[in-house]
Image (cartoon, rainbow, N blue to C red):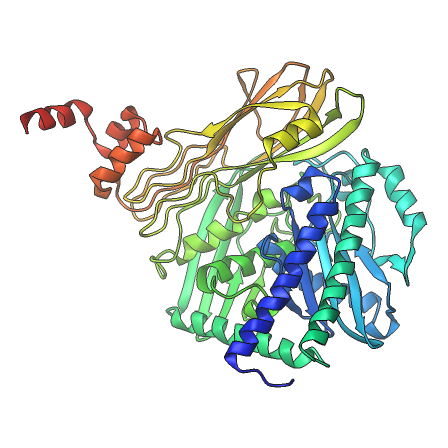
Length: 552
């Protein structure tokens, strides 16, 4: 089969995506840590030339920008002709992977009748990689943990026991870390097996024609969407809080015909904290941002992001160089999306969302009541930015899609009690279309032992901005036993201590005075907006409302 009508192409394309979803389910069900169950992962299929074809629906979408580069680096070290059935390649290299050491990239080649037909890759965030710990306050990559160069984890079916021993020796929770690593090995084995079964079912001898059809169609559609945008150079500059002084992020988005280039000149230099962003992650966030804006209806693959080009000054915080620390690179990297959206707000006013409240990560290390050590992440989120015609969704991570693990799972795994998780009233920016609400999460150390927690939350100094007259959302706040503490610092929680995380709201869109009265009344009834803020932001007066009803 070398040519495909639209219906057949759609069916085959969906089947490839279903295989990646099976890879996702496999790694989630066989993993040992709650981090994977929060879907901090990506699973991808590649053709024999190493081009990404399909990505799991529940994958972190930004990894569509890192996985192809990782594959190219792996194939440069292990050319296709040297690979054998049963081989598995691994790395957590900062600059060849996803931008920090905690994401492990595991790849397996797929063979059919002795021929290499493609590859499966699984990427997950490990619970620990040694070093000082996952935080925003490390000063260089050597503090951050164990670095695994591109190497074979499995050689023709034989596990590299020496590498496993090194990993075990360097991490705080070897059972969880090695368990998650091996879950990736199982997942890519399932992916390769299902890819072979797919080719046999549809009698496909060579995957390359199907691959070319998918990638070509995706690239054509992206170029068409770019060409629909008005030509020009669109600029934006924002201030973002750092661990120390604020940093500046700047971009110029150039559109000419079906070509698009994003230049980050004017961005601040890298800093001596672990919020620096390697270019691989900046590229990934740029590709994801443009695809979400212009081509959200096409599944992720390499063709859909091929037309997007970028550049960033070497040594800047968006193109850091070794040995810069990068553990919390998302704290700056996630701002690439609102930076680009802000630049294009005038050119594409009906597509660009107001600023999101952003995701918050809490790294917790300690000991359970039974004496077993643990380290894990807790994901929570601010609101989603308002769009023209739509209120922002509450507690929706942007620009990402991680999920919070079930409270029962978290409490059983950590012995940390979740005593409160509720929407944060008045946190969404006022507007004709209201910004999404953040949430309030309260955790109590019920382990009987001291805990070390590392906050990694943004939007503490600079709120999520609104668009077209919309107001900003509320800023993020951490409170330990009622006292405000840094959302990016290291804190000790004694037994019984309480940590509150008040998550940031998103920006609103449009003048608040234009919000329909019925929607505002519904917000008040639901507790999303208090009467005080309704009066201050929207000019709503309850006494006048009641007197008006009485007069009727």
